[in-house]
Each structure stands twice: as structure tokens, then as C-alpha cells.
Length: 209
Image (cartoon, rainbow, N blue to C red; front, side):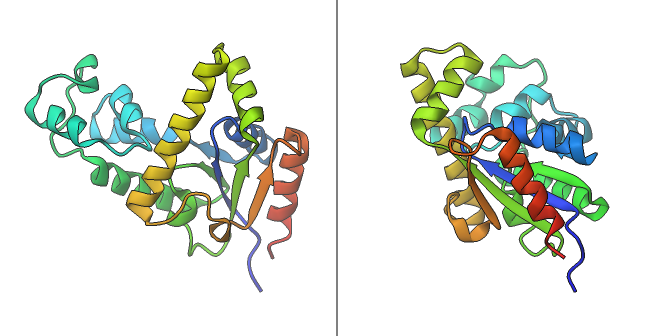
């Protein structure tokens, strides 16, 4: 018999309320939520500024960004007071993230938000993997309200963030971010509100034994 689920990964389209749902679910379950906490852990462990890690998090550097970083010609790295270590490339950052997620899973009772968590813990037997999506129009409206953007800016941000996440998963886990077979549960938060979504995820966690 399979043991009850004690880990949850939530992947989500930008604007699908994934972060809010993860936080509220963590509060109700009494589980730790690992999202920006992963950034803080890496920054603390490797003595790198949180801003630098955050700028690279779930992103794949372009060729120009790599060359700028290599030759010290500016770019987003120059905006931060603490210079990044030369060895901290995308692949290394992913390995750090993978190590943190695996350590968290050993303790259990935690929610991993994004970062390819469903791939890192694909073989972890007591984990439920969830993907949250919503129609583009709904996501744009949410981003407009949450971030104070006009329609055009919100649309651009949604598209850009989705692409960053898709590229990240494709590059490091060789998978389509939206492939339903990599998840146990896919929920449209445009159809189901946050309360209903939380309820469905809780039901899934309780019925995996």
C-alpha cells in the first residue's frame, strides 16, 4: 500500500494564482512552502546576493547575457553590489535547486512551487504533482489588478514569464512544461476559484494512499 502523500509540487502558469494558493494551502496544512525560500537558501549557503539568484531563477541565460557576464561588461549582474561567483551558471544553479528540493522531500510536509519540482521528485512515491492554469484573459486581468499594469503590459508580462518557465523546463528537464502526464492533477483556476482549487488539492493529498 502506498504511504499517504507528504509532499506537493505546484507548477503554474503566470497569473493562475499559484503562489497564493500554495501559501494558503501551506497555512491550512501546516506545511512549509518553498518558493522564494529556495532563492534565500541558495543565497545564504553560497554567499551570493538574493537579488542575483532571483534574477537568474527559473531563467535560461541568453548567449548575450552569458558573454556579458563572462567579460564583465555590465548587464543585470552589475546592478547588484555583491558580484556573482564565476562558477554560478544556470546548470550549477539548477543542481543547487535540485539538492535543496531533495533535502526538503526527505523531511516531508512541504510544498515546492515551480523550479521543475515535479521532475525533481518524479520518483518520490509520496508526492502529488499539480499544475494550475487559466485562460489567458483571466490571467491578464489578474496581473493587471495585482501589479497595477495596463492590458498591454500585463499581456506582455504573462507571455514573457510563461516562456521563461517553459524554456527552463525544456532546457534542464527535456520536457514540455504543460504536458499533463507529468502531473497527477491539472486544475483550471479560471473555472474553479481558489477555495475550490485548494479543496481539490487537499482531496488529492488525502486519497493517495
